Image (cartoon, rainbow over all chains, first blue to last red; front, side):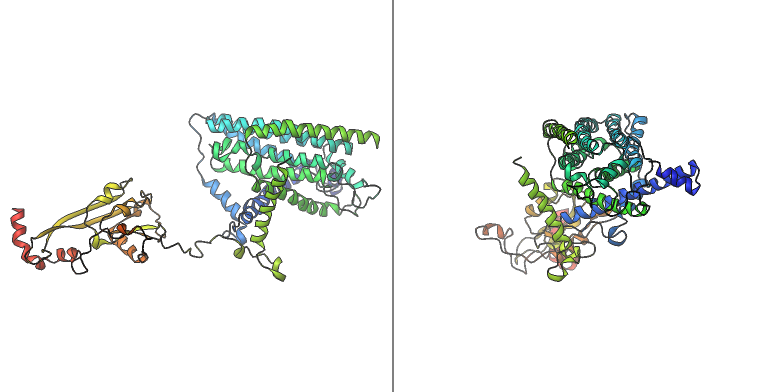
Length: 348
Length: 210
């Protein structure tokens, strides 16, 4: 539980030193994660799926393209609409980005490699991930633009609608693992058995496959990725809630979107794919603090691949189809999933 | 879920396209990624695209044919063609004929910052002075430099592809200008530059001016 604290105690680190190391790692990991997903999937995979090459000229194979883009964004003028609510307008992208930064706090990548091992980790993750709705709504309202406002309202309606199946899908995992703590969820998968066969543990994707599907679909909607990207619908809303944003404020929205995609992939990995645990190792083996993050990264990339694959394949749904799908299909299905999981939990 | 097979098929299409783009090679070398060969796009600044002959790249001017009649300028929806000309006296076409008065182009500019490539000027020109050229590399760092004069427009005539026959049934369109024969056909511009040639017409010119 307090593995990181013990490790810090062994190394003789003060609280402030431990905290600043964690902060530094988070500040490196989060933008790197966003760049990695952005380059691999948004630029390259999308290009290949459309029989293009993607960026070629900046760095080897265009690897530095996103950094060049970021530099370009930083050079741009910071424009506020004349009638905008300036304070709220400025705060909105920060709120959205803060929400995705906070998500990274509880993500475990090894027995001790976690920023803060909260007892209510998954509850916390769900709670801070819905903070981004607030930022989006702030952006839409403060822009004093009807497209932005419509985008903000759509985002609010959509994110609230899909928050429910997301959390209900997580409930199944929580019931099965007997814990809200993400490390304990990983442990439950590592020490679980499939019909007495415990070599690969029991990744919950096997027992909670419906939950996994619902989680992925809702995550797609939470991230406003393309079949569910009505809040930023290019054709109808010319960009939705971030239509008035320029320069680095737009960059913050973009970074938050990709970083949140990374964080949600990590959550799916932890809850359904066995997290950082490698079959054959003890759950507390110190080597997993080094190997765990690597395994985690590979699994995250696989999950993120699915998210972006779906994004580049499907066209946008209509607003009423989106709501109907959430309330009439996903929520009943996830409730049924909880009931069935609960029955099995009691009986077996 | 009747949509499910279609949804899965869609995922298959994108995955297959990605695989074909990334791994276009066959046989043993299948696993060597070669997106340069697999992609359908042309990497423009590095390799040139070959536009079709009739591509609407830029409008070229065959200056000898232009009579500064202003039809193109007046029919242009953007008013992006600027023409100035003056009248000169030309010798009669036939021996004993009257001295003619012809137009000479002083200025023929097209502002490609305004042009929307509708091609109405090409269609409307009764003297075959304007042509579509497939040339497309004429961007400029400054917008004012996109105003191209008759020298530049004439240079583009070299890139105009050879005239192709119209399809049967549209013969009446083929010759828009009555055929005068090569010797008679509008040598006015050269004549205008050379006053000596105009000597037979000089008297008539002064009387007309007076």
